[in-house]
Image 1: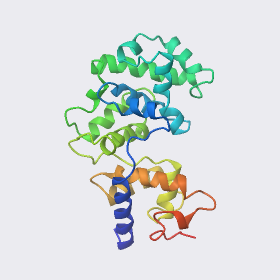
Image 2 (image 1 turned 135 degrees about the horizontal axis):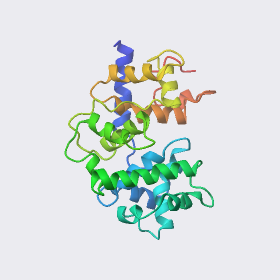
Image 3 (image 1 turned 90 degrees about the vertical axis):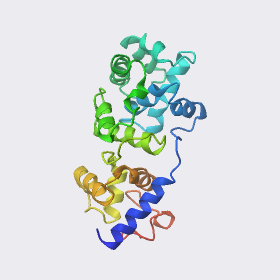
Length: 246
C-alpha cells in the first residue's frame, strides 16, 4: 500500500466510523420499527431481503407498510399466520410496495418460515452469541433471495449501526454496487471500470480487519457527489485526496 492509498484508506475509515446510524428511511415510525432489534429483529432481516432492484428507502419501508396493513401487529406470530397469497396481496397495493411484488412476496414469506423453523421465531439468533462474521454472512445467505451483497450488507449494518459484537469483522466485505465501484476507480484504488472482485479484494487489502467499514462512505460519496457525469468534486469530502478531482 502506497502513501496515498494509506491516506485514502484512513479517511474512508474515519468517515465510516462517524456515519449516521439507524437512519434507514425518512419515516421516523419506520426507523423505530427497524431499529427495535429486541422486539422486532425480523423487521430488520425482512428489510434487508427486500433491498434489491429498487431504491433502498422504498425497500426499507416495506416492513412498516405491511405492519400498517396488519393494524400495527408486526409480531413474528402474526406474520407466520400469513399465507403466501396473503403476503402478495399485502404487497400488491395499491400502489404496489415493490416491483415484482409476487416474487418479493415469496421471498418475504419464505423468510418468515425460516425464522420460525431455524431460529425459533427469534431472528436475533442469527447474530446472538458473538458468532464469527463469516457465520453471520452465511446465515443470511441461507435466506431465499439473499446473495453476497445483501448478506454482507446485513452483517455490516449489524456491526456498524447496531454495534453487535462478533468474534471478528474480517468477513464483512464491501458491497460492490455501481456507486462504490465508481468511487474506488476515481480514488485510484482500482482501475477504471473495475470488476466486483477487484473492488472486493482491494477493500480487503487496505483494511483486512473490517473491509466493510469503508462501504457506506464510498456509497454516500458516489450517490451525492461522485456522479457518472459532472461530479461535484469541490463538495466531496475526499476532494483533497482524489487524483481524479476536476
